[in-house]
Amino acid sequence: MQINISHSNEFAIRKKKPISLTVKEIEDFYTIGYIVLRNLFEPSEVDLISQCFDRLQKTAQTLGSTQIYNGSQFVVENQRIDRIVWMGGAEPELLKISEEARILLPVSQLLKVNSMEQLICQGHYKLPGDQVKFDWHQDCQHRGLGTADWIDIDGRGSYVQTLMAIDEVTVHNGPVSFIPYSVQKGYLALDQAAQVSELFDIESAVPLLMQPGDIAFFSPYAIHGSEENRSTGSRRVFINGFATPGANQKVYPGNGAGRTVRLSLD
Image (cartoon, rainbow, N blue to C red):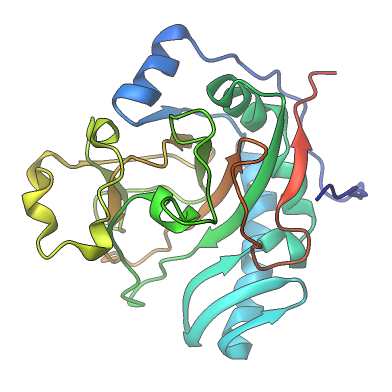
């Protein structure tokens, strides 16, 4: 599905020159499982993204239960926001961010394609006291690896997930932690394991501490998870995921999910 999007002039993105990944960064992505690029987006840009998050948060807190609303899927229970799926449906300007070359150039290098399917445009909030956390998992599980929903075309995952910090991410507010080199284990079906600690060394986990505007890029085979926010401030992240064309066979919720995006350096 290819969606043509009309961008308003209200959301000004500074055309900061995208930077190509180094050979080492590409190698680290496929061996360690993740890389972090610092300060990809400037404070003024992050502030505009934060305003979109604020509007969606207000909407989510009026809904009370999980539902599709205004083009996005709000996964909520009472006042707790587990996530907002395809945020760009309700806030189209977030799609403008997700197709920006600073994000797409590294993804293009990793997947070795210029045209990608965007499956994910998602917000995770982790507000003080909401107890939202994510158990150890691999994103290939959510893509449907091993079922008719997913074909690993390149044999290396055929998918890149990106995670932008909107707030400062500290050890206290529920950072995403990765198991380095777990990507080399392949798909482990962690959701079916009696004891995940028998499959990898939990003590080796590395929390990603990030500043607003930093972006992590990670493999669908990288094992990661996060604990709840134990601070007095929010920990919001903006997640976008891109697949090699033809890998995905599943229909994702949200108005325009699964759109085709193309890298443009003009």
